[in-house]
Length: 264
Image (tube, rainbow, N blue to C red; front, side):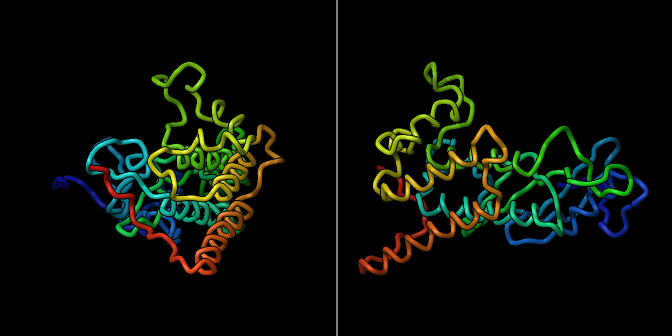
């Protein structure tokens, strides 16, 4: 609950003389169905808080990695929908009009609304182009849009496996999900070893192979070999379209986009 001493500012009234406020003002004006809306800013003493719209089902991180009755395992269809939604949000940020490098693309920053639509939050303050007061965001390190693509590949692996990118509690040789999974994904007979056992039977071998191939492309050690985000979106859309076509031709309805039921 907000204290009486908190101050909330409309984005249009924030002073643009301060570069940080300029950045916040810019991000607050971005609007896309797959971005969480930044709606306000709170300043109380030295505590500065960005205020985002409420997204009912919380983070993808919780749904993939938390175990318990509240977090049901997400179905394969929902996972692929989330991947496509997130890719569309990232494509908007990477567009020439916006030109923002996300910088922190990860499952904890992908939020799900009540219909499992994915929305990116905490989208980064990094931009290609000039630095300084004339730029609404600042460049950090040597990050590029292809850095975001690598991060997208990591999230794809997490969606496939329901394993965290880094986990020292896993057996030796499996601490790094990328290092463990990449050799398996290049062998069509071993892709199943990467997949989350809880959703076995919800996808075809062909689907798993196509997602594995996309993940490998995104995770290439050479940036120039990684696809751009628009190619990623097309790949995911083609996967979705081929599923619809296959379901229609077989006379079998496309599986529901609801989570897998809990096993009792």
